[in-house]
Image (cartoon, helix red, strand yellow):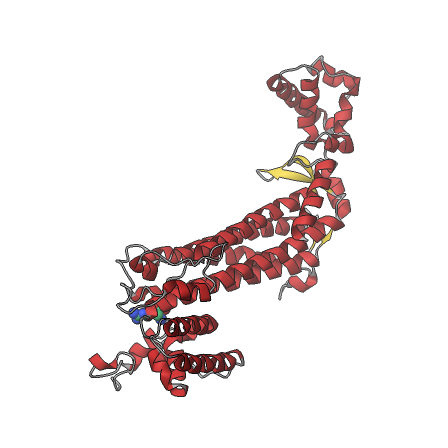
Length: 466
Ligand code: ARG
């Protein structure tokens, strides 16, 4: 049954909202986490109202006192949230007005539309910093594994077939590159969030003489020189959700990176590879098969990346085709954002924990990388150094590989006579091409897995990650 008209907009209504509608409409169950940002926004807004003379300094101080008290309650978990008051904004305003009569003036020249847009931009700036810190933590954990196994070589794979030898650390550094780009992307998202929509009102600003720049500066929406950054179109400001899409996309990209890394580790931990041993603390057993040790942390990271992509898709679909400006649909923007934030942070922490307990099975790596076929390309390069065109060299080495297969011997166990019969430019030193240490040393260019480059990259990452 309909209840008494709700106070905030009650003037126009003869009855209140149905209980079912209240249940359907409330967002406080998830947007309560915006409380610190909402309080911060109200503090700046009331300071601005006093600055332009719309409220007195005494009223401002009373409001600030009330906001501080509510913040303390919220942080202590003592604030009583009510779904009847719909969202975080009305819960706080209600509690504030009960304490401080002057709070009835707080909503002057403000709408929940510019209020929630402001709260979320403050939230995004903090969330991006949070994710960047967790990315850093994951990167450090990866670097530590690289440090502990700096000498280890493994086969690198293309098409899941053995391709060429790489240092294990070189492979790990590929993930550091990905996560570094993720951190840079998050910093861009934080920069895009750094515009103040407050003062846009419900859609078209206000007739009252507010000072948007004052509020923006108070909230830290400023450029590198400290100049206020305020949004330039009131209609865009209350309906723009670009930062949401960018944040969700950045989280989804992190998810994809972690998922690929998880997949490599799952393969490496399998009996077939056995390159690494995962920590018991991040694995589970089987309720049926006693021998099993399953890489659940990595599988869940791989699985959660689907969820992060889903959140991005939810947001894209939510905004698509929405007419300007604010529509209530937009309340649904928050659960996927909070979920992406929380799950991304969790995945990064779990990855760091898994890496911290990971050990490398050096014997297995050494055995796998001893496969001379990994250096077939080096043998072609040998011919190139002897003046043979690469296409011809590639063809000749292909014939050598076939010959070794026919004779059922490893590539480096063919005789000089054997290879000479394939191509006359194979000298007596042909077999040197399979000397792994020498082969690695020849990979000298930037970005290559040679030992000198590896040392450079170790130095670079130590410096970057502090
Ligand atoms: N809880 C709402 C949201 O998150 C706040 C904005 C409400 N605005 C409105 N016109 N009903 O979208």
